[in-house]
Image (cartoon, rainbow, N blue to C red; front, top):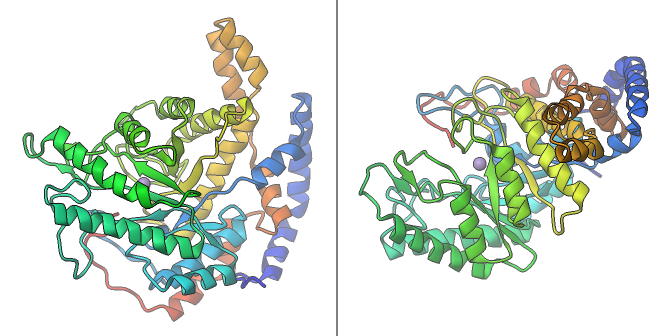
Length: 430
Ligand SMILES: [Mn+2]
């Protein structure tokens, strides 16, 4: 029996208040879509089957290089974080998995698994951390980790990743995500080729121990914390890594890890074409790795990314099953609300992409009808799919209006009384 953090009858009562309006809106949208020869229930079922993983680190308040302003009732550790993640899933029915970060979430692996079972949550990709020094570790990552000039430091970083795989095996994870902060701040500081050779050799050691049914995701990022060069700076380098390591290695695309105006949907298409798209860290950004809420700044871009994913599904691309994870930092909102909103925005982009008339689009592309090709995408994007999202949640036992229901539940106030307030402080962005 799953332990519910929000009373089921409260969700039912809140849903009852909105039942008549939803029924009417859903019928109206269904009628509109049927004129486009789209079966609304088929779309609703597809949306209900679409899930995105929540990052454990997302339920705490983030911060910037300047400061961190903690919120009330912040989780004290991984077990509180899992409670918060279960609230997000209970209300959205869209986030049944959690992505852990080691060492931040280090705990007895069997206890982690048991807690997940109690809450009805399972575990997505494991995330290693060699971009900061854990207390008591022998060698510092100040000048790099997997690509460090010192062999002992590289070995330590490899060992850490192997430990993440071991923990992951116990809790049922099937993937390891590796992002390194390795890079340089000055021209000449690092030898580009030798550094990348060392990185590839280290990753090769990790890859060798990866179980057969696991996938290895590498994440590129053009800058930060290194500001002149990073070792895995872009999707081209990321592709070379995945290609060099082997068939279990894939590229992970974090939407915030590109230069402004980069055509990310096109990168996604390329990686799909060459069988190396592993998955996503979904978020949004205006300037760089802002880690803002998915769909908050550029919802059309999010839709265009999903348009590529649905196109690949539609074409039946072999072995295509990208992992969808959220990677955000919440500085000014209640993280639970931000993650609820993001899960909804991600499903919205997916639903809109499902509405694209692909036969018409093919025709317009073939005929070089640029305007109508664009209009075909816009028509899907302009469709208000909110009734589909709400109905998918309702049918699965979630909330028609998850944020309003969360606020009525008083969950944050309740945990604030149980969890002591952390000290405000400096730093904390991850
Ligand atoms: Mn990321």
